[in-house]
Amino acid sequence: MRVGSKLTVLKGIEKAMNLLKLSIRSSPLELYLLDLQLIKPTFIIRSITVKGRRREFPLYLGPSKQLQLAVRWLVEAISSRKERSFSHRVFNELTSVTSNRVYSIIRKRNNAFALAIKNKYNMRFAFKAKK
Image (tube, rainbow, N blue to C red):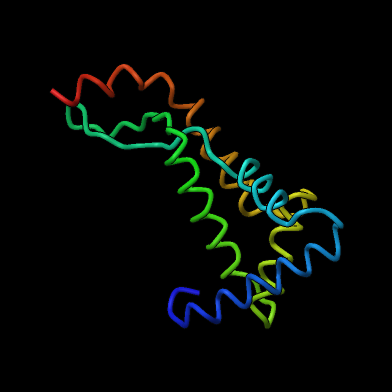
């Protein structure tokens, strides 16, 4: 929900947390934090130009940037769902991440990691290009 009332979003998240509390019988905050741990990426791919060629190299992310990307990916996944109410979208996305039924967010993280492993040879260019 990019544009809208903050109160509407808060009510939707509150309803989703109540649904989570009823369905999993534990703290919804723990589930949310567990989901963020599962989503967090370790690397991101950056592109630089070295001698006229574009090279991609993996860049290690710090904890704050990992959390920022995880939350951004979660918001994108929630807004791309087709459920009618916002609270049901949040509820279904959070439960599907922990039960490994979601493929979009986890696939995005795994693709970033696979690209990082594939392009680790280009790490030697990462520091030479900054001169």
